[in-house]
Image: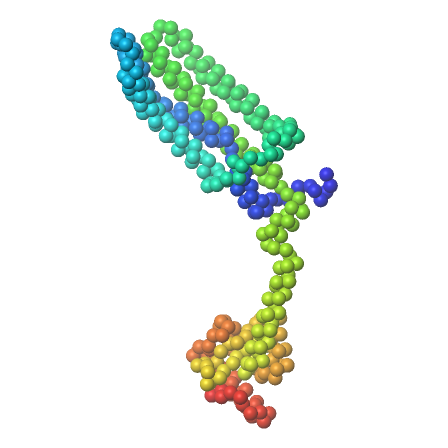
Amino acid sequence: MSQSGEKTEQPTRKRLRDARRKGQVTKSQDLTSALLLIVAVAVLGFAGSYTGSNLAQAMQDGILYATSFHGELNQAAALAVILAAVWVIALALAPLFAALILVGLLANYLQVGSVFAPESVKPDINKLNPAEGFKHKFLKARPYIELAKTVTKITITAVVIGSVLWNARADLINLTTQSVTSVAAFTSKIVLEIGLKVGFTFLLLGAGDYFLQKYLYLKEMKMTKQEVKEDYKETEGNPLIKGARRQIHREILMQSIMAAVKKADAVVVNPTHIAVALQYDRGTMNAPTVVAKGVELMAAHIRQLADEAGVPIMRDVRLARALYDLELEAEVPEELYEAVAVVLRWVYQLAEERGEVAQRSYG
């Protein structure tokens, strides 16, 4: 593979969004399974007597019906008993199923959030490609990682079962002399202990697996430099087109500033960093108005336009800063009337000295 085709770049936001729409997200099924196992064991441990009594009642009712029947089989009666038994079993298992559904949904939501991926159910011809299937099963790291995790979980389960049974070996030997009730209680205790130990061990493995899946996911989502450029073009637009648009925008802006400065009565500067053009016509305006303003390069451009148009330029650092804080086309506030009036009187005096006829009444 050529260097330009190597996937060395981190995935862009667009690529991650597109993958999410396809249902490709970071998720650890092992973490979810571990939580479900712990919840199942815990629910059965706390609600075992309720579940057991209801299941026993359902079995007892079925046996009583079967042994008490002597006449011809009544289909309606048999169906009624079956439905009653199903209802009792459903009630017995309802706490377990409700807890599993709730925890399963919560675990998936905490890992991936809300995902709507209609594209994930669309048929994909690539899934039928033998070459792709071989590559996915034998040439990628995931299958071997999954195999290692499976072997690890089987080993842990065997070790936990062996450890629990070994610690309870004395009680196991005495089971032959115990009552059925005692044997059932002992068995429930052993199963609960094994389930919780295996579950919490798998939970630790699941937490590690989540970060592993995130690492593998981001690695698989990596992009080539060319793919990053194409994504940038799709999201941000072609750089050449964007540059042309910015140039057009600058030209339009400069034309509007040029027109505003030409019709201005004065430009107040700071003296090089800020430039604000003012216009005032007593007949149409309530107060002097800011028609153009800029800093640094734009300020220099405004001064140049003012020089070319013969618009007077006055240096007043404080006034320039105060005027620059105003919005374009904003009228000068009352607290600046006096300072602006000084500027306009100076402009009027210049016009008189030049022998020009004032086109506006400055007041």
